Structures are given as structure tokens and as C-alpha cells.
Image (cartoon, rainbow, N blue to C red):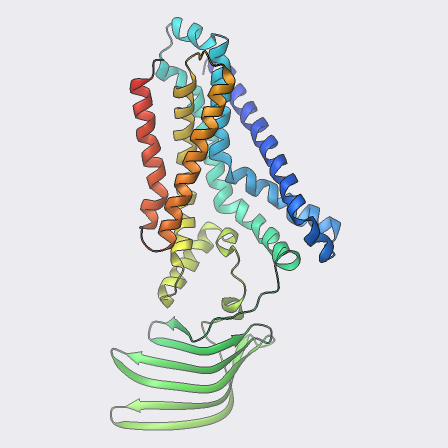
Length: 358
């Protein structure tokens, strides 16, 4: 690390922090303007608005826009250095352009590592509090409305509910089937099941158990029985932005659970998992592109280069959202969806490096 590296690295990080603070402040003001009526309508306490919501809202958005803000900060800083002919002086002194990229890449790597840690372990914990606040004070009361729910709750066990009332934690027209190979071995049918919060068990009411052994069947009726199932009331509660509240280990565990049950919507959680991996790489890729496209002194001034940087940054965001939307519909592999924007912008960076005079 030379004096020049420290100079650029310091300016790079300072510019990034400044840009993030400005954008997040704007986002907070817009969000407050949109939600102030909800706060008054639900009588949300001021301390909860500040500490539970906005204290966790700020790091969420700072991390969410981090790749774009790194790109904007890079373009802003490098274009100013180029406008003052500092880039020309650096290159004229014998420093290669690749060597000039070193402090930028180092700063981007530091931010990438920090982003990976934040998005996988810190931000999800903050989101638990923020989203709980939104469910309580902003969103309408949640009512589970799905009908004819089929769930795989064990390797050979399948559960079915005609409907579920999440207010009373009661499921109606419940069946539990044990299947070995392609043969039904046991089937439990019940009028309804109720969750016992004290026992942490389900109470099965007015049930009938059919045990099937070849051509022989045994029917066992009963009025009530308590049992433990791989099924919880949380499975029927609001899943509003649930994927944002799961740490990396929790996310992996939940994806495995959805796959074991054959549930729909697993693509959303896979996209969240893979996008957390791609975001740090996006920071490095966009930083390098920002240096390449703004290192040349422009006759149109710094403002033009910054504006061009904004356009390219939001093009990346638009492309990512488009690919993510296609993947959520099941028409594109989640891994391809989240890595495709990075791959394309890497190609753009190579093209810019080989074609733009530096």
C-alpha cells in the first residue's frame, strides 16, 4: 500500500458513505410520508416507530442499495479525479491502469465481505423486528385463506386440511396418511384439529384410524387424542417477507423443509439465498466498471459521467429484477437468474476496458 493507494481508498470509502447516507435519508423521508397515516391510524407508539422500525429500516436499505451506491460513488470520485487531471498525472508517472484499480478493488472487497456478513447474519435479525412492526401497525390483519392444503410432514407421511383458521389455530377436515411405496398403510381422518399452546401439541378431535394390512382393515374411532406433528401454527401464519428474516442457516433449513413437503414458492427462498451470494460480487464488478468508464476526462463534465453512472446502475437493477421475476414464475433457474446480471455486466466491463481510451 502506497500513499496514493491510501489516498484513493480513503476518498472512495468516504464518498460511498456519503452517497449511502444521502440516498437512505431520502428513502426514509419518502417512506415516512407514505406511512404516516398508517402510524396515526393504528396509534403506533413513537418509540417503536423510531427504534423498532426505522432503526432497522436504515441498515436494510443501506445494504439493499449497496452495490448501486458503490458504483455511483466510484463514478463520482473517479470522474472528479479525472476532471482535475489527477488520473492523467497518476498514469503519466508510470502507474498502469490495472495498478490504479488496486485501491478501488481493495475498498470494494472490504465492502463486499462486510455486505456478505450483514446480509446473511445481521440484517435478517433486524428484519425480524422491522417486519413484525409492519405486520402489527401497517399491514391489514392476516387471515389464512388457502383451501385444500396438502403437506408432506415426514418421509412417508402426508397431511391434508380442507381449511385452517389462524385466529383459533384450528384445522378442519384433517387427514393424516402413511404411505409405504405405493400402498396406503394407515389413514387418520378427523373432524378438526386444535393447537394446544401449553402442551405444544395438536389435539385431534372426533377421529377415525384405518389400519390397512393387505386385504384386512381395522377401524379405530376416538373422541380426542394429543399428538406431535411436524406441523406448527407458524406454518399457517403470515409469511410476509419471511425470506428477509431468515439468517443463512435458517434459510437453508427452511428451503429443505419446503422441498421435503413439495411446497410451492421455494423459488422465492432459493432466489434470496443465491442473491445473497451474488451481491458481494456485484459490488466488485460494478466498482471496476465505474473506474473504467469515468477515468477519462469528459468535455461534458462530471455531471454527465455521474448521470451516466446512475443510468447504468439502474439498468443493472432493472435487469436483476426482471430476471428475478421470471425465476419466481418458475421459467428460469434461480441460480441463472441471480448470476446472469453479474455475468452480463462482467462482459460489459471487459468490453469497456478494451474499447474505451484510458
